[in-house]
Image (cartoon, rainbow, N blue to C red; front, side, top):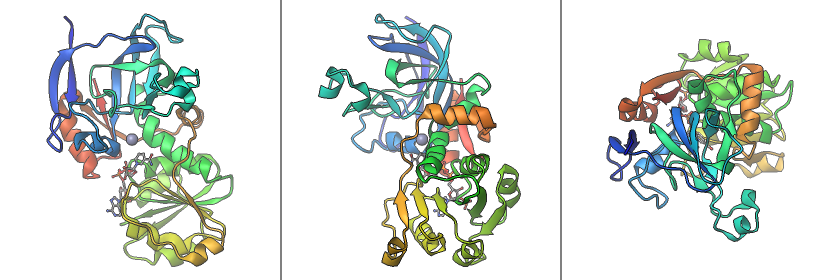
Length: 332
Ligand SMILES: NC(=O)c1ccc[n+]([C@@H]2O[C@H](COP(=O)([O-])OP(=O)(O)OC[C@H]3O[C@@H](n4cnc5c(N)ncnc54)[C@H](OP(=O)(O)O)[C@@H]3O)[C@@H](O)[C@H]2O)c1
Ligand SMILES: [Zn+2]
């Protein structure tokens, strides 16, 4: 029996633990992935805390990059040794009515990596054929991993908001998602204004492509946004409903705000902002493939801090404290 190391959430809320377990064998429509890198995302906290009915033990991790180690009995469009990635959407359940009718993309019970199947905090994981993406050659595995969730989410936000060349785009919160959003917006030809709660990230934001910087702690951010003409798009990555709500009057006429910072608190939206044309959405559905392709072509890369698998719990805590610059990545 060959074994591997895996980091699992065992008890709701308790620290993640490393265990030794059997290397799984791929079944029909599955491959075995030898994991090279896996990003640590705030979304993994749902697994650690067993929220949304997630059954433990479970291996978290939905920003997975690795190579195909073996292929299940039904074959694969990928070859052994090929580099692939897995994001949130692990693949179709192959059991619901849509799957049985051959419409995998319309699966009503999509498998979620690190929630309904084991994820990438491990030396090996099972990948589902229809959930795999190809990683462009020019991107190192540890850099590619955060692009599978943080990258896709921010790129998709800008696409969904219709951000185009010359548009003023504001990015609120300069962390794992925000530092990518600035880069994507700048590479799309937008003029970027970064908003952060102090001055410490100004030089960084400018080096990533921001033309303007607003310190939300010591200026009136609404007045500052209005003085710039009001952004066409506001990308909200800071998970704070009050802070997000506070910025709404600063958005330009018929502007769009994208909420990606996860908050359960209600937002306060003045009715007249909607009458004036404000629209709001989540990050939308632009695919990982599109985000990876754009990143490869334009040189967008995450700033990462790497941790060996044995230090997954430490990396996780740093990510939760927002002290990682700017995405934590496990390397095997
Ligand atoms: N929608 C999706 O699909 C999706 C995907 C991935 C992640 N997310 C969510 O996106 C959010 C951001 O993730 P991340 O990786 O960028 O996190 P992060 O690295 O911790 O950065 C978040 C940034 O928001 C600001 N911030 C954090 N807590 C705040 C608070 N309580 N009040 C005001 N500002 C605060 C800080 O920015 P400054 O220091 O610049 O002020 C911080 O750097 C999380 O809530 C995460 O769950 C959503
Ligand atoms: Zn994520």
